[in-house]
Length: 274
Image (cartoon, rainbow, N blue to C red; front, side):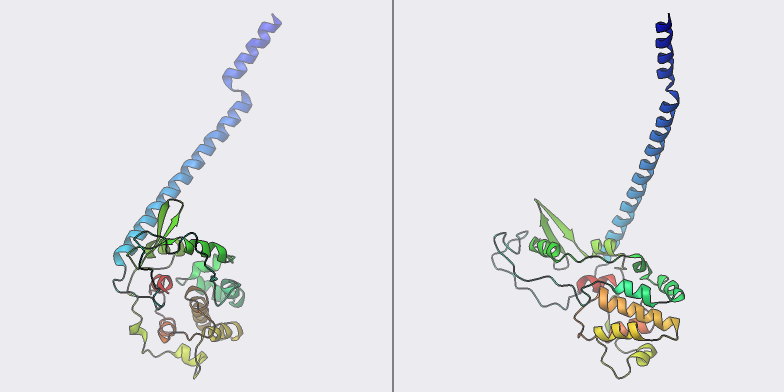
């Protein structure tokens, strides 16, 4: 009889789930709810990204050209052929300049005061303050460029990974960079502007990439407004549109920032095509 009673108790416990079963069920339900929320969040983010990419694609400048020299293309290339044959060994190195150490954001965070950082965070570049230094993987970039394929749209880059071709255009760049990539990116209208900011910090001086970094790092800013402007100029010239230290910064870039019109300028366009 005792055996029957024990078996019955066990059966009742199993049927009821017991305290352990109830706890496991609650955890399982909570986990499912959390997963559902994550999936919904990802779906919403995908929809936003698709809308952003479509908007950029529709607004893409028809005649925007890069300052880079034209690359000679082999005459025997067909569409979707690799620029470089798998058997070819490319000796050139991929370089990141001017700041190989990639510490521009770190310098901005350390140089600006607490109040100045708050002002910078309110600019269109504010989210960069939360970014971390990224180790530049030159070999990774080298291998990716080695997989670039020839296609007719000069404003896009396509790469072959495995058996598939993948696009990297201004639309994708808008999503990954967070920069504004829609709007009028014509720099010529900023050529002739009165610029008290530049007159104060670069009077009678050739403004190079190196000069901008030096001014930002070693100036004692009396004005929070000018400190933030210099930080923006430093980020743009030494990180986003980077070049060798000796290169002269275009006067148009100086004026966009100096006259406080950088907040509405579509920086993603010149950054992508530079």
